[in-house]
Amino acid sequence: MVTMHPILDCWDHLLRRDAQRIVVVHGEGELRATVGDVDRLARDAARRLSSLPAGGVVLLEGDAGPGFLAALLACWRGGLTPALAPASGQETTRAALGQALGCCGVARLIGDWPADEWLVCTRANTSGTTMPAPPGGAPGVLKLTSGSSGAPRAVHTTAEQLAADDRALTATMGLDEGDRILAAIPLNHSYGLASVALPPLVRGAAIVQPSRGNPFAPAQAACRHQVTFLPTTPAYLAALVAARRPPPVPSSLRLVISAGAPLTAATAEAFRATYGLAVHTFYGSSETGGITFDRRGGAAERGTVGEPVEGVEVSLQPLSAGDRRDPGQGTVVVRSPAVASGYFPTVDERLGDGRFVTGDLGRFSDDGRGVELALLGRTDRVLNLRGRKLDPRELESIVESLSGVREAAALQIRGEDGAPGALRLVVAGDADLPDAARLRDFLHRRLPPHERPRSVVFVTELPRNERGKIDFAAMQRPDFR
Image (cartoon, rainbow, N blue to C red):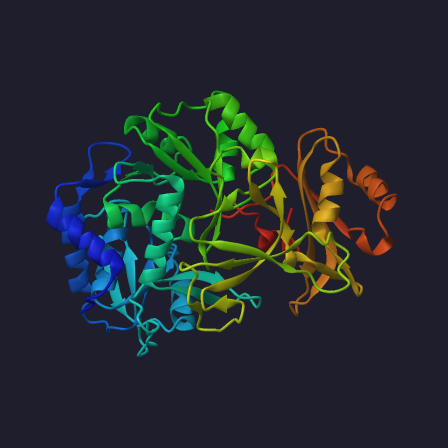
C-alpha cells in the first residue's frame, strides 16, 4: 500500500472535498465522469490488477479519458509503475515491449469510454522485473522512448518529479482548477500526461475528450463545452488555418500552447490572423517535463521557444573544439526538480541527479524585453558523409529558400547492416516545386561534392508521427516515396 504519494494525496483530498465534481466530459453527447466515478473505476481496476506484484512494471496500453486516469490511480495504489504505451492491437508488439521492460503484466484499455469490459489485465508469462522507486520516491511512470540502437527503453519519472513538473507548469502558465482542457493530444505521451491527464488528478480541472477520427471534432468539442485551455501541436494548428473554412473556436479560450515539434512563424501568424489569439510555444521533453514557455505569446514569430519554466535552469554546454558553428551556440542542458531519475532498463550518463543533457542545439536571444531560448536543430542529427561532418539544417535551409518548397529533410539511408549510407533529400511543396534536374543543378552550384544528395524524393507533405514530429525513420526506408 502506497502511503506517501503526492498525486494520490491530491486525488484523495479531491475525493473527500467534492466527489461530484466533473473531471471528464465526452465531446459529443452527455457522457460525464465525476471524481467519484473515476475513483470507482480505479477501485475496479485495482481488483483486476491485484494479482500483479507490488513494485513491478505494468504495460498500460491506451489513453482513453476516465479509464486512463483510473488505471493510473489503480497502478499507483497497488505500488505498480505503469509503462505508458499506445494501443498497438498487435500481440507481438505488446510482447516485445513487455519483455524489453521486464513487465509483470499488461493492462489494456478498451474503447473510448469505459463500459463493462473497459480494462483487460493479463499477467506476463515471466516473473517480471521489479522497478524500484529511487530512495524517497513513489511510483510514477515509464515514458516509452528508444535509444540509438532503436531498442525499446523508457524514461523513469517518479511521482515527486511528475508533481514538481505540474507545480511549475501551473505557476508558469497561470492554470487553475477552473480550467476546461481539450484532450486533443495523446494522454500517454509526456506532453499529454503533463498538460491534460495530471490537472484533473491534482486539482480537479475538467478535460474534454473529443471523438476520434474526425479532424474537426476537437474544435467542435471545444465550442460545445467552452474550453479554456488548448494544448496542441503545430500539425493541428497548420491544418486548422489551412482549411477552406476554418472552424470556430470558443470565446472562452484563453490559452493555446503548441509543443511536440517546431512551430513555424507562418503557422503562428496565420492562427493569430484567423482567430485573434497568440499561440504560446512550449518546449519540453520526456526526460525533463517543461523546459521553456512563451509567456508573452509570439515566440514562434520571434524565432524562439520562450523563457525557462518556473524552477528550471537552462544552460548551454559549449560545442566541441574545432566545431565550425557560432560560438554562441551550445547543447541545451536542463536542471530542475522535475528531471527524471534515469532511463530504464539501460543507463545513460546524460540523464540523472536532476540534470539532463539534451540533443538540442540552442542559443540565447535578447530582444530587450527578456532573454529567450532559440532552438537551432539537433546535435545528434549531424551526418558523417565520407568522413566529413554535415549539419543537415544547412542543406535544408538552402533548399527551403527555393520557390515552391515548404519543407525539406536531409538524412542518410541506412543499409541492411544498419550503418548510415547515402544522403537522401526529401522535399515537400506545392505545384511550383522545381524538378529533380533543376534542383540537382541548383545544389551542384552551391555545395561541395560530399554534401550533394545521392537521391531526391518529392512529396506533398513530410511524414509525421502522431505527436507532429517529422518521421525520419519512415523516410529512411529504401522504398519511401
